[in-house]
Image (cartoon, rainbow, N blue to C red):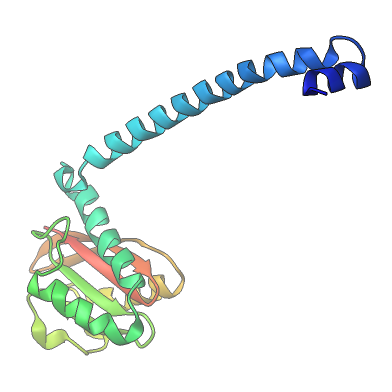
Length: 180
């Protein structure tokens, strides 16, 4: 006994035949929808991949991307390898989005400076020692914000000039990128 005959006998005349005849149509429609979704997804992926954050025109955007990129990278590093990766950032072995923007990296747990671009003597010092011309302890402010899981902008005055720095907080570090 064939499937069509079984369906016809068990469900009444023509019922099994209608379902069996429409099954290829349903498969065809589902296949077309799948291929359209796949095509759109691939096109979106290619479009997003070709947009390079390194070509962002605004210095503030570049600072945010710079700090966030480094911070996300450091978040995935094992604790015992954190200083190795920080050292590679300092040596320029790890590509940064905005290498022209100075960065500093601090550990949130004990509040120490892991890297301060241009000032190697600041390494392993308390972040509270970073004070701008107006007396604002911007290092401690960045640490406090990071302990509250807040990333954001800091305003500081260095050498008589106003600057902004974006600090990205991802436990166990906070990375700040200075807009020159």
